[in-house]
Each structure stands twice: as structure tokens, then as C-alpha cells.
Length: 309
Image (cartoon, rainbow, N blue to C red; front, top):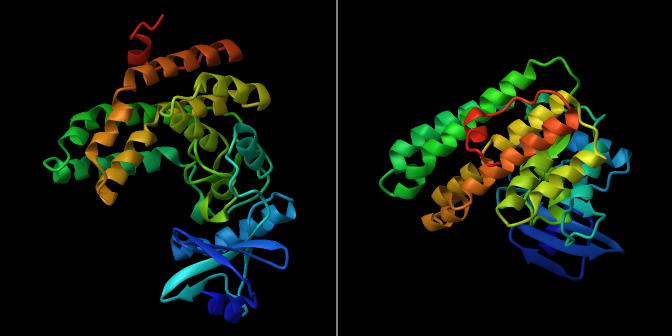
């Protein structure tokens, strides 16, 4: 790897540490990572553009560095890699303020449509169709996954309807730089890594952070109240926030991990056993939003009828 860095970037580190598909090193007082680029090749130009815009706004994202051939990607054994300079403590854990900072600081940055992910209803409908088709193929191998599938498909349908109705409201919404997925145990290296970035509504990141935090026994109701105290969301954005909480990405993500990575099916139980508690959380958030905005917040009838009061 030292030869690659010398030839393509004129960098000559003494030591390189290797973790997963990433090579970390320090050279001339600067910190770098040389990592596998694992997104579609069609995304790279758009990611490079927003990376430069974020750097110009002094957002401490890792800075993509072109090689000596003026190319963003460098191929090693036919595998694309990208070099980036790191400006943050890569091992520190993410937090609510860090997430809000990177979202709010990038609101004015325009993105190419190729990395836009704010058409939630179309994306979720496609996911449901794929998931339903897959159930027929994996039913015998993963019976427990399939037993619970209808519940989460139904919850996804509720989210689709909720977001579709909210989208018709004439109110402002803010797009910003977000992430494909944020998890409660992520570090700042992941948060500030441009390879993970997309363009979406600013509620996306915090909602995914809240959902993964819930299933890791974090007090997520406090996260919700803290978020709304420190960020002004329009009425429409509040509804989109609730619709995103409704969508069970946590189930679909874990399902994909089990099927694609041959993990034990039993790990799905950590989600299943907390289904009732998550419904109660959704009920509490609905009450909170109704009181905060002092206007009608559409409900999901079957959740309200569970009578959590």
C-alpha cells in the first residue's frame, strides 16, 4: 500500500493501520484515510461536488483528494479506492448536536438529483414490493422473519400514507446533506465521511438516530424534545418527522443483514420484543407534537386505540 500512496499521491507515511476496508495514516502532520469506495460509480462526481461545497463552508467533512492523474478514484487490483484528509477526532461518538450541526450547516448546498433521497413514498413503496417478493423465496430458511413481516409491512404502509398526505401540505421544508443511515453507536469518522452522504430532508438523520437509539435502550423521548427545542421545524416538517419515525427501517435493515450476511435469525428478537414499547413511544411523540404545535397532528388510528393512557 505504501507504493500505491507514493505513486498516485506522492505521500510517504512511515506507518499505516488497516481496519476493514480502510487504511489510516499520518503524514507531515496531517491525517488521512485511503478506503474502498463502495457506492455506485455514478455517484462519485456528485459526492465530490458537495464535498468541495462543504469544505468551502468550513464544515469539517473529510476532504476528498484527487490523485496525481487528477482522478477522484484510484484502482487497486480493480477495486476503486478514495483518499481523504481527516480533520476531526475520528474515534469520538456522534451526538445530537453533531448531527444537527452538519445538517443545519448544509441546508443551502444544492445537490445533484442522482444523490437525492427525499422522495420517501416512492422509495418505501419499492422497498415493500421487494420485501414482499423476497419473503416467498426465503420463507423456509427464515420462518421467524417471515412470521413478523406482515406487521412491519403494514407499519411501512402506514408511514407511506402518512408522508404522502403530509407532502400535500403547502409549507416549507428544508433539504440538506444527510447520510444513508445513522446509528446510535456511529463515530465522527462515519458522520463526516462524504462517502456516506446523500441529499434529503433534514429530519432524516435525527429520525434514524432516534430509532436505532431506541433499540439500544436510550431515552429517546428526551432526544425528541431536545431536538425540537433546538431546531425550528415547520408544521409540515413535524409531520414528515413523525412519518419517518413510523417507518420501520430498523426491521428492514436487520432483515437485510441477516439474509445477506448469513447472520443468526434470532437477532431479530431484540426488535420484536420491543414492538409494543415502540408503539407507546409513537403515541407519546404524537401527544408531544400535538401540544407543541397546538394544532391537529394526524394520527395512526390503531396506535391511538391501543389506549396507552
